[in-house]
Length: 137
Image (cartoon, rainbow, N blue to C red; front, top):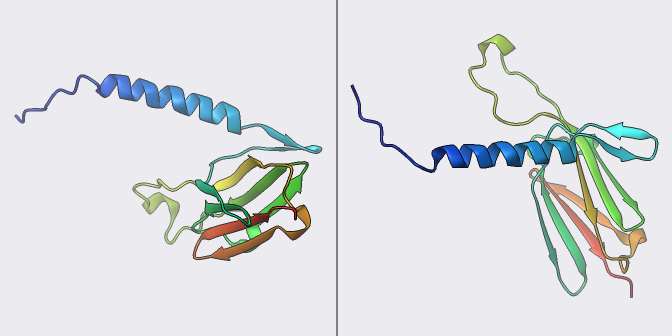
């Protein structure tokens, strides 16, 4: 019989994770854009920073094809949506674990009104989408 070290904070951490997950899923699951409803199955991580030229948003999209990403700017909201396809390398029954999220994603970023929406640039390189939102001159 092995000895298992008791962690008094384990249950509290599990509760926090459950509550966080509940809020994350309720805030993301049903987003409305124009006349369609988008159901987001996962949310890609993003870094956002500003320099003298404008705002840079870098989004992690490993395994997402460039053709499966849509970018729209609508009244100071940058909308990023797309899909990561699950392409099994063997039959699904042979998988022991699938941890990476697949399916549709949606991110909305509120940006300042001083963005030059006609010159927004997107670069997709090695699974990272880099969006450059220049400031108006």
